Every structure is written in C-alpha cells, then in structure tokens.
Amino acid sequence: MPKPMTNRSREELAFRRSCHTQFTTRDEGEDLIIEGYFVVFDKPYYMWDDMEEVVCRGAFDGCDTSDVRALTDHDSRLVLGRCNQTIKTLTFYIDDYGLFGSIRVNRQDLDAMNLHARVLRGDVDQASFGFDEEEVAYIDLADGRTRREIRKISKLWEITVCTFPAYEQTFITARERDEAAVKAVRLERWKRNQKRRLRHHHD
Image: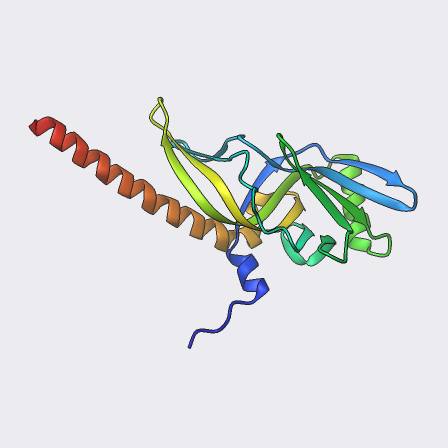
C-alpha cells in the first residue's frame, strides 16, 4: 500500500518558477516589511532556446491559497511568514500584473533579520513560488518556438525570497521532473507534426 503523501513531499513535488523583482522594505510601526511581486503574469520564462513559459492572467482563479508560507530559498526551515485563517504574518493579493506579497519580518528571527538587511542593500532581488499546476497549453509561435502557458494553478504552496533560484539544490528534483515532462510533450508534438508533413507530402 503506498504511503500517504505528506505536506513536505507535496511541496517537494510542486513546480517552481522564479523572476527578478524589485523588493522594497519599510517600517510599519514595530514591524519590518519585505514586499514585492513574486509572480509576474505573461512574462516569458525561457526554458530552452525553442521553449518559453508564461503564467497567464487568471491562472490563480479558484486556486487553493488557504495556507501559504513565505520562505527563504525554498527552504522549509527558513519560514519568514505564513497566511492562513489564523496567522497573517504574510499577506498577498493578485492584480493584473501578478501576485504581490508582503512579509512581516520577525525581529526575533536572526535569519529573517539578515535577509531583510540583504534585501535592503539590494544583494537579494529574486522571487519565486511553489505551486501545483492544473491546466497547461502548448502554443506554436511564428518563429518556430513553443510557448508553454500555465493557465490554471490548483494550489499555491509558498512564495520565496531567493538569491540564485535556478541553481539552488532545493530546485533540482522539481526542475528535473518539470523538464522531463516538458520534453516528453515536445517529443509527442514533434511526432504529430512529422505525421502531418508525411500525409501532406503523400497527398
């Protein structure tokens, strides 16, 4: 009998994407705030020379955002904030541009305070998020490349402030699984295109 999937194993399987962002910091009474866009809609994420990916506007419609963490470098041991029914140390909203998050920094957390200092100096300027996707479409572009459109996200697990997200060890399992799945779809699309060309040639 298979073992039940824990929250941690679900998070490890979640897809992850990153982008540069313009984080800002501010004081709000006794609180220190780190905030910025963690997701930007319709901005290409280049997977290969012939493949790009975008998160579409509306992808979060109906998404489960009931319990979301803010992390550092996708590390579940470095929790910066949380948003659920009872805890609001992380707040976020979705607009036409993307997903904007505000993290209330815990002054008693040395890791969080160090991150705040790095963001304040501009040393850290990348954001990412972990999610489960539900609906994806592949679009052939005029220049011969393919666009992978994430049209519906079923679950938002976390948003993260990160340094080099594409190279973090925590990315490896998820990225390898992502790339294997996308390569399989690319191969299937290539086979279908070849069959169409052969039928056209014989006709």
